[in-house]
Image (cartoon, rainbow, N blue to C red; front, side):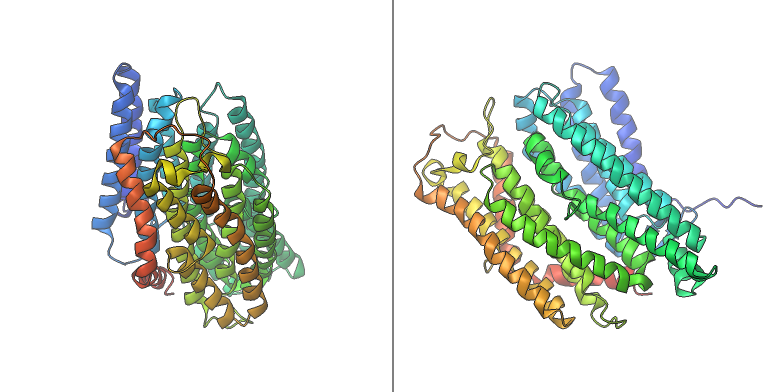
Length: 497
């Protein structure tokens, strides 16, 4: 058997990030005194170069390499660029917050970089093993980040919960992958899809079909945990609340893009011919997420917990796009449905970055601005950032004309096109429920007297970037079609077969 040297060029971005992670690790060991700033600067430079490298090498072609374990396509390139910029933004927002609390150390930025590498591997995986390795690299990095503030009992408790439940979910996912492998004889996603298409999965009669269905259930369960949807949502509010806000910002943004890519690779790229089965599971989880997420968020007084339950409902909306692609075997609506889901994921990440950015902006050493009451009278303290927070809340509520409105509208259009009108009606009703707790935040900022009258101190780079982030929500709401077209182009180029 002759060994064929694989083409490493398509994986240049991942190799660069991996190499720079090791360089930064060694530098921080030998340059302890000045390592704090060096770690941050090199991490940001690595992410910027990785994004530029992806931009300059993307050509819309689908290339598979590394023994079918890696796929380079337009969807992966777009998501990798967005992940890089999301992590760059999160690190800028959280730097002052981490410094005030004494955990702005090189290891913090290294874990963020390793988590980014894990997300990139997930986005470009074409094989169960590479997908699982990327997922574990992301998960283990996030566990470490949640527990990074070692003096906080709340952070340690959140990390333990996250670790235990995450390990369980990873086990479920791995068990499902092993079952699918047993039924199809393939580990590559394209090979699994071909085996199912050729009915190779039922070569041993009913028993192999049963094994395949059980594998599908376990895979969907593991995927649901990573998305944080009902009934695998238990970790979300506790981890969002217990983790330092700068880490909550990391958990609630870029990993959602990676989870969407993971869903597309597994369900659409590998298990598309079983869509009638997994769409039903996604429907149940989406309905549960919409109902529980919005109703539970009403009772929250802690802003981070409110945003956690809000995130559960938003992920329910994302699932609505995924489940409306195939109708009774007809795939006419698939492209529009998956485009709406990708657009929703991107819109949610932009909104989530801004919302947690505002919380970090209002926090200071010895004070966490994480309760809704901490926003009282914000308009009198800073009318500009009160207006920015209002834009975020209006967009999350789906009020025209912000990006959140068009994200919801695109998903609802896909549901109606798939003749799932009752599901669209339920989603609209739950959005009306959600509008209550979003508008409550606006009411508190503009109509209540301030409890905290301390001036808002933040670095100019955070103020400028946060303002740009919030204005992007409004700008993309005025011109959403360009982003929708980009999502559609990426999916057509990646799944044209």
